[in-house]
Image (cartoon, rainbow, N blue to C red; front, side, top):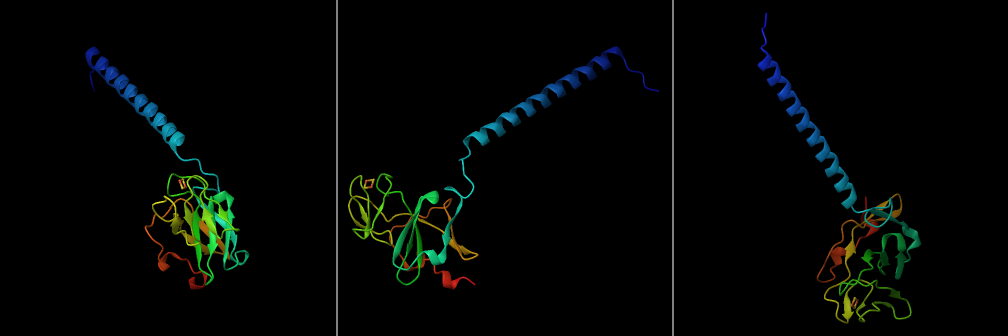
Length: 168
Ligand code: FES
Protein backbone atom coordinates (compact mmCIF):
# COMPACT_ATOMS: atom_id res chain seq x y z
CA UNK A 1 0.00 0.00 0.00
CA UNK A 2 1.34 3.42 -0.98
CA UNK A 3 0.82 6.40 1.22
CA UNK A 4 1.02 9.71 -0.62
CA UNK A 5 1.39 12.89 1.32
CA UNK A 6 -0.34 16.13 0.30
CA UNK A 7 3.09 17.61 -0.62
CA UNK A 8 3.87 14.63 -2.82
CA UNK A 9 0.55 15.00 -4.67
CA UNK A 10 1.22 18.74 -5.22
CA UNK A 11 4.66 18.02 -6.51
CA UNK A 12 3.26 15.50 -8.99
CA UNK A 13 0.60 17.96 -10.13
CA UNK A 14 3.26 20.67 -10.53
CA UNK A 15 5.48 18.33 -12.52
CA UNK A 16 2.59 17.31 -14.69
CA UNK A 17 1.57 20.92 -15.39
CA UNK A 18 5.16 21.80 -16.14
CA UNK A 19 5.44 18.88 -18.54
CA UNK A 20 2.14 19.88 -20.20
CA UNK A 21 3.35 23.47 -20.57
CA UNK A 22 6.61 22.28 -22.14
CA UNK A 23 4.81 19.96 -24.54
CA UNK A 24 2.47 22.78 -25.59
CA UNK A 25 5.43 25.06 -26.30
CA UNK A 26 7.18 22.38 -28.36
CA UNK A 27 3.98 21.85 -30.36
CA UNK A 28 3.51 25.56 -30.89
CA UNK A 29 7.10 26.12 -32.05
CA UNK A 30 6.88 23.06 -34.27
CA UNK A 31 3.81 24.43 -36.02
CA UNK A 32 5.40 27.88 -36.37
CA UNK A 33 8.56 26.32 -37.85
CA UNK A 34 6.52 24.25 -40.33
CA UNK A 35 4.59 27.37 -41.39
CA UNK A 36 7.87 29.29 -41.89
CA UNK A 37 9.34 26.48 -44.02
CA UNK A 38 6.18 26.41 -46.15
CA UNK A 39 6.27 30.20 -46.53
CA UNK A 40 9.90 30.40 -47.65
CA UNK A 41 9.91 27.30 -49.85
CA UNK A 42 10.17 28.33 -53.53
CA UNK A 43 6.80 28.07 -55.16
CA UNK A 44 7.01 25.52 -57.88
CA UNK A 45 4.24 24.90 -60.33
CA UNK A 46 4.08 21.21 -61.25
CA UNK A 47 5.87 20.89 -64.58
CA UNK A 48 7.04 24.50 -64.41
CA UNK A 49 10.24 26.42 -63.75
CA UNK A 50 11.99 25.18 -60.63
CA UNK A 51 11.37 21.52 -61.36
CA UNK A 52 11.45 19.07 -64.23
CA UNK A 53 9.91 20.53 -67.37
CA UNK A 54 8.87 18.43 -70.36
CA UNK A 55 10.17 20.43 -73.30
CA UNK A 56 8.42 18.26 -75.86
CA UNK A 57 8.89 15.39 -78.27
CA UNK A 58 12.50 15.12 -79.38
CA UNK A 59 11.36 14.96 -83.02
CA UNK A 60 9.89 18.48 -82.70
CA UNK A 61 13.38 19.91 -82.31
CA UNK A 62 15.06 19.84 -85.70
CA UNK A 63 18.86 19.89 -85.82
CA UNK A 64 20.13 23.44 -86.28
CA UNK A 65 17.18 25.07 -84.51
CA UNK A 66 16.73 27.03 -81.29
CA UNK A 67 13.31 26.79 -79.61
CA UNK A 68 11.99 28.68 -76.63
CA UNK A 69 10.20 26.76 -73.87
CA UNK A 70 8.31 29.41 -71.93
CA UNK A 71 7.21 27.24 -68.96
CA UNK A 72 10.83 26.37 -68.25
CA UNK A 73 12.41 29.73 -69.13
CA UNK A 74 15.00 28.03 -71.34
CA UNK A 75 15.86 27.41 -74.94
CA UNK A 76 16.42 24.04 -76.52
CA UNK A 77 19.36 24.44 -78.85
CA UNK A 78 19.50 21.43 -81.15
CA UNK A 79 22.92 21.41 -82.71
CA UNK A 80 23.59 20.29 -86.28
CA UNK A 81 24.96 16.95 -85.07
CA UNK A 82 21.72 16.21 -83.16
CA UNK A 83 23.12 17.16 -79.75
CA UNK A 84 20.93 19.07 -77.33
CA UNK A 85 21.63 21.95 -74.97
CA UNK A 86 19.05 23.48 -72.62
CA UNK A 87 20.14 27.10 -72.15
CA UNK A 88 18.69 29.28 -69.38
CA UNK A 89 17.25 32.52 -70.74
CA UNK A 90 18.97 34.55 -67.99
CA UNK A 91 21.85 36.75 -69.11
CA UNK A 92 25.04 36.08 -67.18
CA UNK A 93 25.80 39.81 -67.07
CA UNK A 94 22.98 41.28 -64.93
CA UNK A 95 20.21 38.76 -65.40
CA UNK A 96 18.07 40.19 -68.21
CA UNK A 97 16.02 37.81 -70.32
CA UNK A 98 17.94 37.02 -73.47
CA UNK A 99 15.94 36.31 -76.62
CA UNK A 100 17.12 34.21 -79.51
CA UNK A 101 17.25 36.39 -82.62
CA UNK A 102 16.57 34.21 -85.63
CA UNK A 103 17.40 37.13 -87.95
CA UNK A 104 20.84 37.49 -86.34
CA UNK A 105 21.40 33.78 -85.72
CA UNK A 106 22.40 34.45 -82.12
CA UNK A 107 21.17 35.31 -78.65
CA UNK A 108 21.16 39.07 -78.22
CA UNK A 109 20.63 40.58 -74.78
CA UNK A 110 18.67 43.83 -75.13
CA UNK A 111 20.01 45.35 -71.91
CA UNK A 112 23.71 45.91 -72.64
CA UNK A 113 24.17 44.02 -75.90
CA UNK A 114 25.81 40.79 -74.91
CA UNK A 115 25.81 38.19 -77.65
CA UNK A 116 25.83 34.42 -77.34
CA UNK A 117 26.03 31.76 -80.02
CA UNK A 118 23.81 28.66 -80.15
CA UNK A 119 26.10 26.85 -77.70
CA UNK A 120 25.54 29.76 -75.31
CA UNK A 121 29.13 31.03 -75.63
CA UNK A 122 29.74 34.76 -75.29
CA UNK A 123 30.66 36.29 -78.64
CA UNK A 124 30.46 39.95 -77.58
CA UNK A 125 29.42 42.40 -74.88
CA UNK A 126 29.97 42.50 -71.13
CA UNK A 127 28.63 39.01 -70.17
CA UNK A 128 31.40 37.30 -68.19
CA UNK A 129 30.56 33.70 -69.06
CA UNK A 130 28.33 31.50 -71.25
CA UNK A 131 24.60 31.08 -70.65
CA UNK A 132 23.92 28.59 -67.89
CA UNK A 133 22.78 25.09 -68.78
CA UNK A 134 20.13 22.81 -67.37
CA UNK A 135 20.54 19.01 -67.29
CA UNK A 136 18.59 17.23 -70.05
CA UNK A 137 17.28 13.70 -70.22
CA UNK A 138 15.03 11.70 -72.53
CA UNK A 139 11.90 10.09 -71.12
CA UNK A 140 9.39 8.29 -73.34
CA UNK A 141 10.67 10.19 -76.37
CA UNK A 142 10.36 13.57 -74.64
CA UNK A 143 13.15 15.91 -73.70
CA UNK A 144 12.94 16.58 -69.97
CA UNK A 145 14.85 19.50 -68.50
CA UNK A 146 15.72 19.83 -64.83
CA UNK A 147 15.38 23.56 -64.13
CA UNK A 148 16.19 23.05 -60.47
CA UNK A 149 19.88 22.48 -61.15
CA UNK A 150 21.41 25.21 -63.33
CA UNK A 151 24.99 24.56 -64.36
CA UNK A 152 27.42 27.47 -64.46
CA UNK A 153 30.32 27.11 -66.85
CA UNK A 154 33.30 29.15 -67.94
CA UNK A 155 33.45 27.83 -71.50
CA UNK A 156 31.63 25.54 -73.88
CA UNK A 157 32.85 21.94 -73.87
CA UNK A 158 31.61 19.06 -76.00
CA UNK A 159 30.87 17.05 -72.86
CA UNK A 160 28.06 19.51 -71.99
CA UNK A 161 26.00 18.37 -74.98
CA UNK A 162 23.28 15.77 -74.45
CA UNK A 163 23.05 13.20 -77.23
CA UNK A 164 19.65 11.46 -77.19
CA UNK A 165 21.05 8.57 -79.24
CA UNK A 166 23.40 7.64 -76.42
CA UNK A 167 20.51 6.91 -74.06
CA UNK A 168 20.05 3.17 -73.54
S1 FES B 1 22.13 42.02 -68.65
FE1 FES B 1 22.58 41.18 -70.56
S2 FES B 1 24.17 42.39 -71.28
FE2 FES B 1 23.74 43.23 -69.36
